Length: 498
Image 1 (cartoon, rainbow, N blue to C red):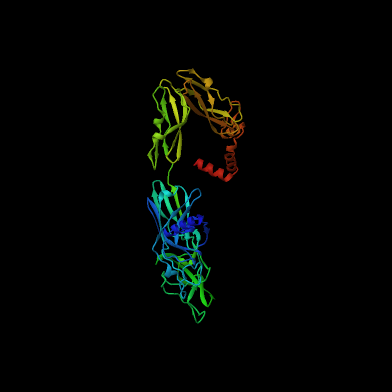
Image 2: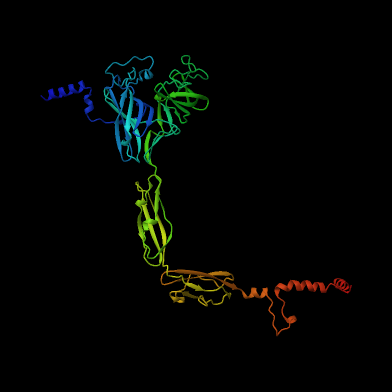
């Protein structure tokens, strides 16, 4: 009875196009493009979906004759989120492009053969992935997953779509980007023999160069197996294939064929992407929030005690993306009081994404019936190194409080050892918090320098007995020289007599 049930289930699955193995647990094997060949032919993005078109198949595995022989999925993997998406198979044939000359087609039921050709029908695919399938702010790498149902091979490999510039769109405040950088992509030749052609076409002119390698193949040029090209000069799509332009040079003969490797002698040289392995930046789909911090506008202000006040009225906020969000401002901290003084208020705001701004302002609370105090102080002159009394001849008076000299504060000190003009500042605060600051200049002089600059005359000492100031000594020397010059004196006397 159990065998009959299993037979009925198997028959039903086959009749509906479902391979019995498809209901078993499938293990995906990560492979390189050498084993899972693919090309991405087109990628588009709009506000609703991302469209990816191309073809893929497992090489030398089985016939692909209809849509039940295989299936294709795309896998999108980010750091915190992954998902797969079923691609729709399209009627794209790669049979003629991949058929080896001189080989017949494999019989049905022959799997994994390399001495015959397989059919590659319906190997095209299209995946229209809703944009909201991708978690915003994530970066996804893309794999193609291929299920060869007949040969029971299930492979996956990273997708590459080398392009010069990212494909981008703004969706709300997020910029979606599709990236696969052409300028950091390298290609490795994974098929042989492959002609070196002068144009991007499977019928393009084949390169010939230099001496012959054999009488059979002459000097026809072929790509050297596993050679690597690090500089991709151009890229184009034709005949459902991606062609890459490289520069090359002649190398050794292999299997009687003349091979080329990367160089600067031969250009342009084109090769189809179906014969190469990629390295570099795989197809990446990312979304980045484009958002600016909001900006609070608020300025210091004076407040008259007793006047109605709402501190939130003194702050506004504009957000580049959201516009006016002043209603979202909150007071993060405040020490404001209804009394004379200077207070701080800190405003805080967040936009819808948590970007924030904060700003602190000063509020000076004043009383209309309070006059600021007055500091009485004048500039002073003192001798260097002398004792200095900071409060000498300094007082403070307030119209309401009277004498408040005892409330005076010194804001800085002076250095009496330095003969210079120095500022000295005082501050006083009255009973209502009104502040007055006044600065005076302290002139500090040096006695020696002062004596050199001036001559002091004493009534008790005749001038000719006084010492001559140093600054005058040069003049005295000049006068003495003149008096010792007889000729000069005589000429001066003659001039005087005349």
